[in-house]
Length: 125
Image (cartoon, rainbow, N blue to C red; front, side, top):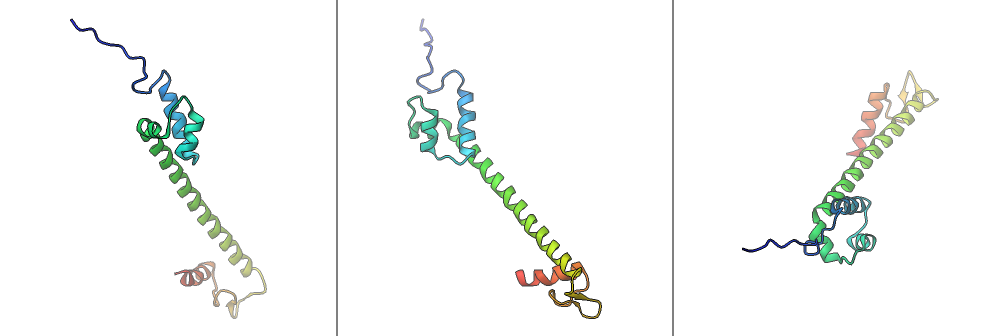
């Protein structure tokens, strides 16, 4: 009768609380740390190759979260630029650059905000 051998976790490099390590690796990857930096912070005698082999899913998830956050930040930045542009256009309609006779002199004679924005957009393309 063969006895089932119990392991102490060294073979799989998983220790009690390994999900905690997975979470930490994921957070560090999301923060933009590379594998060398993660290895130094995780410690425990693990090298970069073992980190990749054991925690590759956590590293990929962390990097994906970072890319999503960057994409959201870029989208928010674009809308911020558009808001600033609309504010500038609106200010010109309340200034001497706009007359009923000639329209907005800075924006191709536009008479409304929509016309001024369309005038600006034609030069962006």
